[in-house]
Image (cartoon, rainbow, N blue to C red; front, side):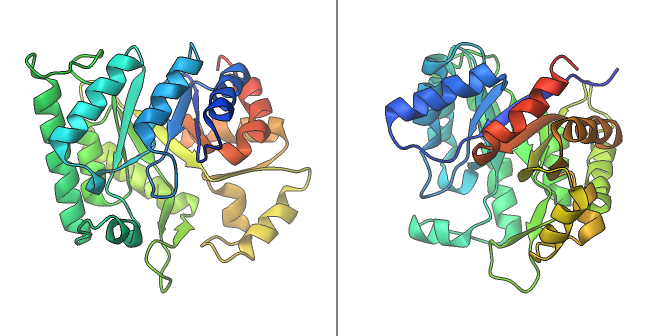
Length: 296
């Protein structure tokens, strides 16, 4: 049996405490299962935003999507995680990544390092979180034992191995550095290349006692009666996809709500993606799709 769908929304902006709480309540009313916050300079600080989201709602889980692990010392991060999990009543899901924007680290006065060094730091962070949060003597204690569920996002072989070894949720961004463009400029991966990443992950995860949940971040939800016309517009944007690839890309939803729901069913069957995350500009546009898929 396929894993049931879950739906998350990655929320990018805070205008005020009142509007933030209202947006969280509205997402809950629309049926979203997880309220998520990214980790970039110029965006909300994740942990206080998640505590406010949990206080404003009753049902959704809350999570980081994903933490820029280079911003954190592992021991200090363990304190943040345990405190947030306790204050949200055990609703936290911890998403971790290496970060991909050099300028953010430089602005924060933090080392950037090579890709290998960033993965090394993420690996050490995960190992320390497991050690510290699994210790009955750690203060504070998380509500979830031994720690909140871990989501790891990435596409490279080392990141896929790390997710296979440690994560309850493996997240596929479907994006990569755009060749010949400034560092941090991403393009979308065609479906066949994303399928290869999923297959590589599944190979690494073959010995897991329980299969992980697979997540995909949908970059755009484009409601239309003419899918091909929209795909042509996307191809003209030079983001790594031609017209046919845009129609098939798991990071895009194009069509009517019924067509989008069918696309997600097909992608769950083809790739295993059952946990679907959208960005908050598409909170409303995705809601009819969510309704179509409720309970499936």
